[in-house]
Image (cartoon, rainbow, N blue to C red; front, side, top):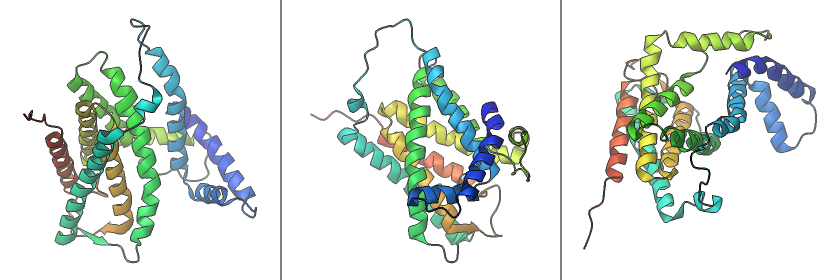
Length: 298
């Protein structure tokens, strides 16, 4: 995060300069879309992308430093085998996505019926779904590989399964909680990234924010790690993660809060409040039931 904070102002100026210099250029469609996205992006978004890039770059030396030297000959399944879901993998992927979307859909129906949220005027369901597909796929694949794949396997080397699940879930919640309290005002200077880093630390001092989203994110992490541990593969947790990201993105585009809402029960989006927490826990119980030991049939 420190590397990201130092790099972000320089990346911000370079990206904004490139976007401004090419405003009238005849760019390919995908590059023009990227230019428009850069033009609209705020500094806090650039900061987030920079520290995520730094984390990915530093991941390889981190994993190498934790290599198990006591077992120099480690047999691993071929890559083709590991990335092939197979029949059970496709089933787990589908069940996870259906459970996540289904329970969040029930919660949305409740919120609409009691008048805590309302449909946004002029919102397009098709547009909301299309804009959610890319983050849904990318976030679920990358984060599940990193958190429930790499890091969970590393923790299991020295911790019991439940200690690893709880520890990883706390880390998962903290990483997703690490967002600036507000954006930095213009002009952006060399220390703007460090200012945002300070704002992130201040968020932990606001108990209402901590209780509003951190505990829900922790519960999400527990459900995902439990699904990974009990199923023995990443497909179920990928399906759950994809379904939850899909709901966060589409519901924020299609609905808005009303003045009837009780803040402690439902916050700014479906990740905050007691009600979302309860539905995450219900999803966890459903996953536990799905993964229950099957009785032998004779």
